[in-house]
Length: 173
Image (cartoon, one colour):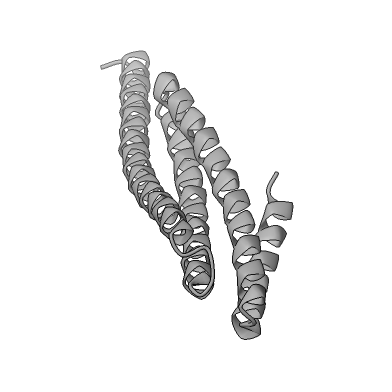
């Protein structure tokens, strides 16, 4: 075999190796993206569950709205606010996971799924903001009810949670 023939063979082998490495990298990125997507879907399920549970507690609180059951209503609102906060955190995790999936799909050159993942990330972020705002309002109502029942210890506890929510809202873009 001539030197020119040997050189062509080496170049062809290097090209084959490079292409196979590229395909392998794409396959790994695709697999990673699918795992991020699965994790995001699980977090989304957790978030919607806590969000729904909070709504049920709010409805239940209205049954105890007037004295002497105002304390029960305040406790239910407090727990509803806690559920909204857990939902917020889960929506935030889903947002991060969707963003990771979008990047991985981009690496895998799956532009359609990358765009879908980015859209889901935006929806999760908006849901996180919404639940945090709702939780803030719920904590305000609980604090007022605790004050009306002279349960100042629980009022201060709820006000601490309220401050935490407001700080987080200020940190969101």
